[in-house]
Length: 113
Image (cartoon, rainbow, N blue to C red; front, top):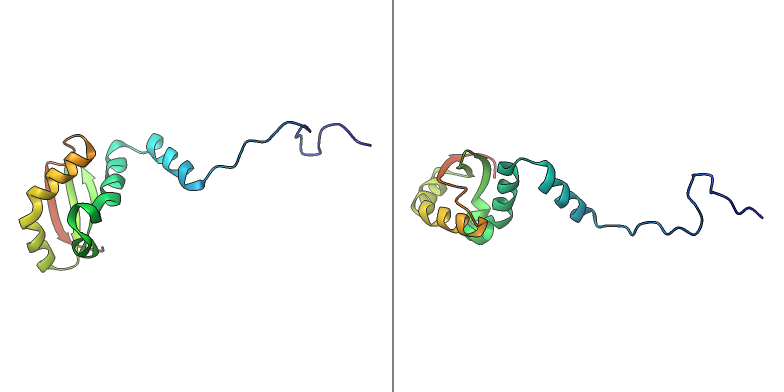
């Protein structure tokens, strides 16, 4: 009867680590490896429907964040026009939810949503 190491070098009787959910691992990696602006953009994208409403979220989406300027893509000029009226309120909600003033300007342009 064989009682030594397994052929793959795993010792018998030593419990292996418990499996972890992939979404948790990816979230941990994103938090530690991405620059702050990219992490902030992920947070904004996650919260976007709650910040602007479902209908607006179907027609707009955050595209980039650079030096406190958020670029938002919209499906049409009509949505850009509508969102211009909401810009100040969106920035206030964003900064409140992020806990810091990370967005000072929002630019809307036609793009893929």
